[in-house]
Length: 74
Image (cartoon, rainbow, N blue to C red; front, side):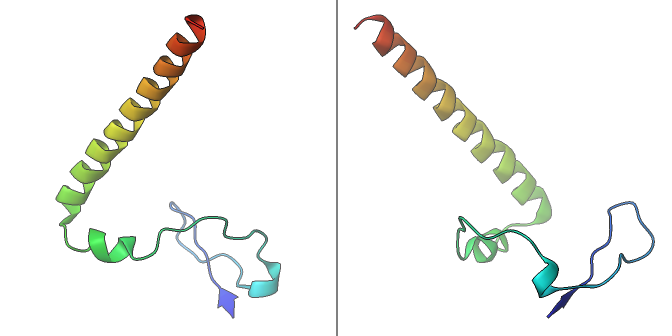
């Protein structure tokens, strides 16, 4: 297995590498998300990412503030 990469602002391919040269491992994956995102247009996906990202950030802030308040009163 070989991989050919190219930078975002690069007109030519980088050197081809083989699978043994790739460092790292998968520690988490969400299967079939690509199928779900293919149901939306590019514009809808953009808004979906913004909305879901905002909800996740809001939940994180809520969780942190709740924990801080709980610790303050105990």
